[in-house]
Structures are given as C-alpha cells and as structure tokens.
Image 1 (cartoon, helix red, strand yellow):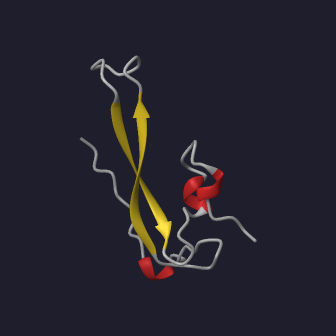
Image 2 (cartoon, one colour):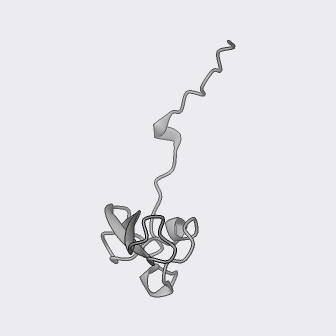
Length: 81
C-alpha cells in the first residue's frame, strides 16, 4: 500500500477567521430539526440535532458558516452591515 504524505501545515501562517461583526471568538451551539412521524423510520416524531457555531460578540451564526449549512433562518445569520 502506498503511503500518502500529508502536507505539514504551519498554523502560524494561517489567517484567523472573523464574523462579519468583527468578532473572533465563537461558541458551540445546537439547533434541532423535527422529523414528522410520517417521515421518521420509527413511525414517531424525532428530533435531529445540528451542531452550529455562534459569534460571542453578536450572538448570531457567522455568515461564513451559515453559507455551508442549508436552511438556517435569515434572522439568525450575522450579515455585513
């Protein structure tokens, strides 16, 4: 089996990411989607957790993250002012 060489990343050279509000510290959060009993494989209503990050400064989901997850309500997304 061929060894695949992983690139060495120098973290010092990578940029920090910020929210559109300018905040750079984020917290983990969970949003929950509901699956109706009709669509659920168990025949019962189910809840599906979805991990998110929120900006500590503005309390919203950063746009760079929200763009990768479909269906987040617009009012929860941090936008450029």
